[in-house]
Length: 327
Image 1 (tube, one colour):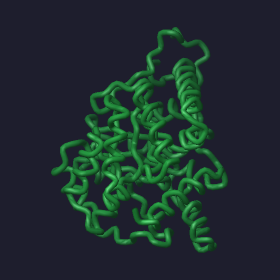
Image 2 (cartoon, one colour):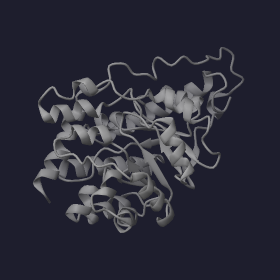
Image 3 (cartoon, rainbow, N blue to C red):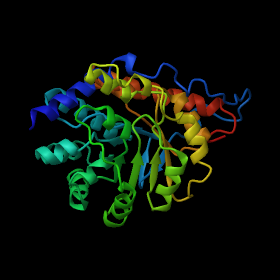
Image 4 (cartoon, rainbow, N blue to C red):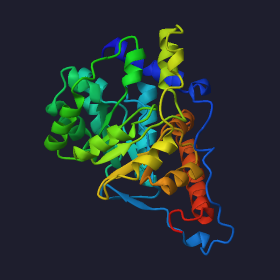
């Protein structure tokens, strides 16, 4: 494996754990929501399950992409995350498979699927790679090694521009995404990484046949700050506040989302109330990465505790939110 690739991945994980690289204001916390003082519901009978990609999830939640296995520590983290997805029936979005393809780490992806034979697993790589030699066969390789239920392409323009070794040519990607929709055998989902997919772009992607949009807006991990930390200069500071509010994007995009497509809320999802707020605004699912990263550093038992907390918080939210899911 190229040492520079491994160093970059491990640096992302280390810097990403620092709370200073989270947006200072979590916008889900500030979102007002209608409280129901006398719910005509039985807490013990509330259902939290949903169907996603023909699989039943115990919560409308995706474990967001963190990192692909590159050493013993990241291998153990991924083992625990995919085990949680299998045992607790959550969806799992693997970290970027660019490093897998370029370093022939296919066995790592196949191992993850063996650990979670029935889980909903999403393949993943950066859309910009389509301008740097990647094609349909690379996309199929990412899907096939994981026996993935869908493919996620992430849009990370600002991150790539700030990243010292970043890829900066995003020209013509819309046409290549359209071709990918037609050529791969699984649904295609497009996500951002913390700055948000603007409504106009989301509409164009839905029109091309993209199955899902993950808004990945502001409110959580700030990749401008993370890459600035790697640069060790102050050039990227003006861009720290750039982007769209995750709740605002969910609200706007849900207005025109086709009925047969999905909308995923991410960017600052930290608890079960945030998940409920996301669905209340019009999302079909939520996705969170940072809470799983922090818990995952402490082992599998902490991930189980996190799941139990999220599940309880979400169920309480369903009980007391007016006009929310199951109201």
